[in-house]
View: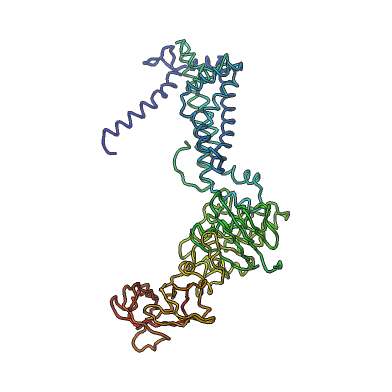
Length: 268
Length: 364
């Protein structure tokens, strides 16, 4: 595309997408309670304030517990579903897989409402556990989608070759299947972790008295004085995301190099 | 049948996939040390039959015996057979030597002995020194060799080959055919090859089972299969054959007298008659190389017919002529070896066609 219009369109698009994120670190180090230009000088006070905030740490701990649990549970469930859908035939397969994938497109609001009503009616105490439950529902379809493509690209005769050479189905799984779908498993863990970490609606509806990071940050915006500290927190989250993505990309490329495949784009 | 006569025995093997009848009563015996081919078009059940030996396919009824032992209930990992897969199924995350030594994982031998076995297996397939390479970095022909070494290192009673050469280019394929034949003679293991390539089957096999629609149509050595196919279908699948309608004039226990348009009255020995006797219609089959175009000065063969050249296809070493014999509607194909000093004839030229009654096959 040589046209100057497309060129400026592309630039405008990228600026719109990423400029707000660049503002996070700028105001996190700005020595003013007001989020506005011109900048007032350099300070690390907001990071200190954030660091000493015990409710924040509580929210971070809750979020980590939830996201790690959700990543592991969803990926495990995804493994089962992906394996059975790519390898076996069973009655009503298409329908069952469709229902598993449905939460991906279902409005979260509806899910959260329905879950809340049911949980309250059954008499379950709202807690981190109920948030995990809700998140697993939302994350499992993503895990299934990622892992299905990993299983689909697996030549079925690899498995047969391992049986043929004397291995049992169990040892074949450990020796052949698992190593070859490992890049998919890592992708799935990372995606589920990320989705769970910044999920808001379900966490807000099903959290009860427990607060997670996303809900905490949203709450802080009600107090203008707290906003710069939130900016500091945001800056750290951006850094962590970059580290996480880089790690994921590293593993993905290593997986491709190891199995001799061709690089066809990002890990999503 | 005694144990030494049959390495593989199929006893009325049937296989159903739901309503689909994939194997329809296969009964056959494969001898020890034989290079045996299952040949047929795609969907004829040849791969399914091979997979029943490996244990990847359950049979619906009948029995599959390997070296006298019924394989019913024996899982694939406990069978004395190994397989070379169509896709080679090389483990992409392992090195060449890890691939080749994969089947030795449960072998009680020492590490050094296993490493020596891997080295020997690699040397046998011409991949000496390739052990440390990553499997995915190999070419198609090299993968094929790794797959062979990996299967043969376990010294199976039977090696199963599922279209192992179909992914290679023509030159490489012909080279591998020769190497496989040599390898099989060297190790003395029974090889069972699945292929849809009739030429490959003819070149490599001691015996061939031609399969159509889940049944073995003919089981014979390559020469019998080529010269005495037992049905039009087999004749058509193996090489090229000209078919001409014929009328049975007289029928005796040792010979049949027939008449074919353009060829006149022909005396056919009973050994040339294929199929059950039916009163009227019969078909005469001629291989293209059993018909000869006679040049001036050439002595005639047994019999001679006149025709007009319809089409000329020049192959360098060979020329194919489609010749319309006088008094017939459809042209017959004649293949002629090109000899120095002998001109290639033109379309429309008149030709004398020499032939011999002993070369034809009569299908009833």
